[in-house]
Structure formats: C-alpha cells, structure tokens
Length: 438
View 1 (cartoon, one colour):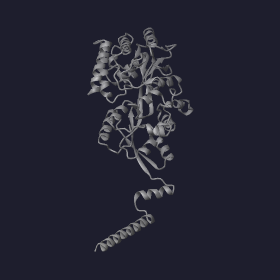
View 2 (tube, helix red, strand yellow):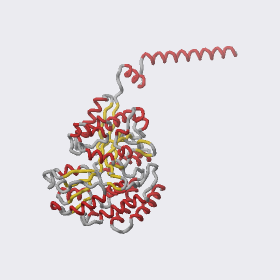
View 3 (cartoon, rainbow, N blue to C red):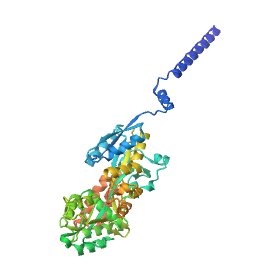
View 4 (cartoon, rainbow, N blue to C red):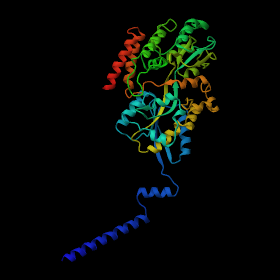
C-alpha cells in the first residue's frame, strides 16, 4: 500500500514536469506577453514609443515648438506633448501643487520659476537630478553660478537652468559720461545730473510693497555681503551687512532725486517714466532695453545703455529671475523626461530658445555664438554677461512665500521711516526662524 502511494506521487510529479516543459516550449515559440514583445522589438533595432507631457507657461514665440521639434528629430522614440499653463505664475504654481500633492503622473517635465525648486523639493514633488547629471557628465560650471544655485537645495540639484533674467542699471548716454560703479557714485551722479536733458529724476527703482521690492532689496543686501538664508537653510539676515545695505537703500529711497511716490513704483511705473525721458538712471530687467528703443513709445531712442548694478562693500549683485526645468517625482518615464530636460537646458535647446524666443541663455559660452548675439544687443554686450555672472537668487527655501511676505513688511517699514534698519533685521530674523520651525 505504501509503495503504491509513493509510485502515484512520482507519477504525478513527472506529469507536472511534462506540463511545465510544454508550456515553456510554447512560450518561447510564440511570445505573447508585453515584455517578450518589447525584447523582440529591441532585437530588431526598434525602440518603444514613449510620450511625455511638458507643462509650461504661455509662449507667444515659436521657441517651445522649435525646441520640441529638434528634440523629437534627435529622439524619434520620445514624443513630447505640450500642456500650456496659465500666464499668471501664481495660478500655475497652485495647479502644480494640486497635481503633485495627489501624486499625479499626468505631467512629466515642467517649467519652474526660480523661486520654486526648494519648495517642490521639500514637498517631495520633484525628482532629484544628481544621478542623471553625474551619469551624463553635465558640467554645471558651464552655467552662470546663480542659475545653478537657484535649483539646489539640501545639497542636491532639483532643477536645471533654462533661461535667465537679472536686474540691470540703465543710464542715459546723452547725459552720463561714465556710469556709476558704486551706490555712493550713483547717489552723487543722480543728485548732480537730475534735471539735464529735461529729466525730473535721478533714479528710478521698484520699492512698492510687492515681490519687486524683494529683488531690489536682495541687490542691496548681497552687494554689501549679506544673506537672508544660507546654503544650509539657516536664517542669517540679522547681520551688520544687512543693516548697512538697508540703510543705503533707505538713503536712496528717501532722497530728493527719486519720485515723491517712489514707494508706489513697480516695473510698469518705472518703465513708463523711463521711456518718457524723466530719469537719468533706472533699475529694471533686460526687457526695458527693447522698450527704450521702441520708436512708437520711447522718447529716448538711441540714448540708452545698460551696465551692472552699483557695488557695495562686497561688489555688484543683480537679483536673479528666470525659469528652470524640473521632473515630476511621480513621472512614469523619468529616463525619457531627463533626456528632454537635458536637451532643453543644454546648449542646443538654449540656443534655439534664444534665437527663436529671445530668451537669455544660462550657459555662458552661448553669448559667444554669433547667431545668439544677433538676437539682441544685450546678448552681444559684455556688460550683460557680467550682470549674469553676479546674479544672486532670492532666498532658496521651501517656504519662500512666507519669507518674501516677512521681508516686504519689514523692509517697507524701513523705507517709510517707521523703523530702523537694525530693527528690521532683528524682526526678520525672529519671524523667519519662527516660520522655519512651524
């Protein structure tokens, strides 16, 4: 009886083995699952077609389409589908937060304002890029330092620079012989030259209580060697350097060579007064050069040049603007997404964006390219390259909106005379540290 049961067990085992062998032979003869099919395609030299979604702001130029066309020609197995986000960057930001907080995979690559990377990194919305950068030997030293720094948080790189913007000092060439090198030079010249060639003011800037105030303040603070938040995400704003910078800023805003309503000035007020020929100097972004030479709008065509922002004790500093490219942490195609990020932020993609869209490259060597130089007098101007070299990002922190609000309130109180620069620095330090610890 025992022998019979043992023989029966052996026969059942042999039968099972024969069934498995038959199944394996059938599978190898006729591949049916997706992986086997993919392997067969690779063996035939074909790659699987992948579609990635690239979310970006409104682009009224041909640049985005041209970049994608060039990329798809180079990578025929990767199709890029564009998703246009709202022109209001705040709305775009909020839509990204909604999507990524729910771990949506709909977007693979997205454009980010230079003030977003730290926030998105901390929230676990973005994919860190260091392994890709190292694998492909990307040299971040080819980029302007500030543009790289804006995408770095907690020791990791979360975003690649795509195109940039920076604060610029404009001056009237029919009035100024040698542009000022320091803030004290600017004050002296603005006082002396105000009134020449029909001007009413010596200097224009953005000092209303809004984000533009922060960019102006950062230029003062950095030029005197101060910082707001350091690379270790520590608040360091309460320093002698910050205090001196805010005192100099107050000296400029409180002078008699700026408009009496300077505390209401944003970019548009600065632009309008400047192109009407009302000032000797103005601080604004690179776009103002185009407005200055617009024959239909400007009364100072041909009499405008630009230079670096005035220096403080530590040198010249320009506030960094511009956009970066990031990858959604929940993308189902991270390798393909990186190929696109690498292309659009690399020399070929940035050149296309410059030539087709007039966007300022973040790679220094592109400013030696004749086709890029032909796009704008700014791109051919060595002074503009120097501006980009000295550009500093606004505080790189995951709670940037709160930091900005604190700075706007406290610095505005200095400019209105309601508190001292030292009190502002102390208050900012205390309030920022509290916000960081929430």
